[in-house]
Structures are given as C-alpha cells and as structure tokens.
Image (cartoon, rainbow, N blue to C red):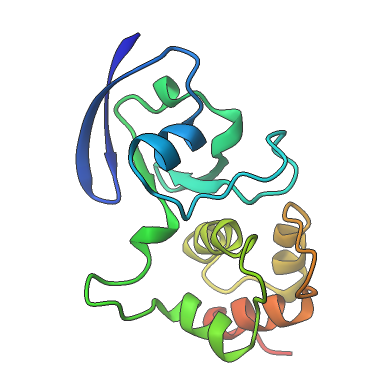
Length: 155
C-alpha cells in the first residue's frame, strides 16, 4: 500500500492504493470515472487511453502509483460542467464518428494530444494516430473526418 497524490481532471486526489493497482482500475473503480474503458488489457486496443501531463498513455499499462504527482485527464474532462460538448466531441457527433462508443473515449484523448501538439495535423498523421486504436463498428473514415474538421485539415 502507498499514498498517492495526483490531479485528475483538475481536482486534487489523495488515496491509499495497492502497489499493483493499475491506473485504469484506479480511475474506474476507485474514482468512478467509467469513461476510461478497459478492452484488451495489453495496450493494443487504445480504449483506456488518458492523458498524463498532456501525453496520451494507456492506463491499462500503468500502475496508479506511477502517476504520483501527475496531472491526469480523462474523457470526463472534455465537456464543460454544464454539459456542452468540446469541439472534438461535437465533431464526432456531427460526423457520426461513433456507434457503440467503446473506443471513442480513448480516441478522443489521443486526438486531443495530437491536436495540441501538431495544431493542424495532416490526414495521414490522423490515420497514423488511429493505427493505435481498434474500432470494431464505426470504420475509421468518419473518425478521420471528425478530427480533420477540428484541425482545419483539408480533404
């Protein structure tokens, strides 16, 4: 057991956690942040992606203790407190870039990092980003279109 102190979605959190507790399980089970989905538990599907100090990471591959002192953002941080969607979420809605929604939180978190880092990524860069995410029902073209629209990337 160890003391863990970090910031999650702008809120300071202090908890005692088991040494082997995964960040994904900490977020979902200890804090009730169910937007971080757990799919493969091997870092392949991307469903558990969160941002750690602004960088997209797989929460199923990290121990909660490794996030000590860090700022973690989950998909719950994207909409404002009144419920208005972020530009990226709204673009996903308009482009029908989700169906079941299981992969969507992880993709949104990775896309947010890409947009923050690159500003206006090319469609090819967006496609490369998506190579780290498995979507079984939407197909990727509408997801690329949604991210490209927010980025201002043309055709």
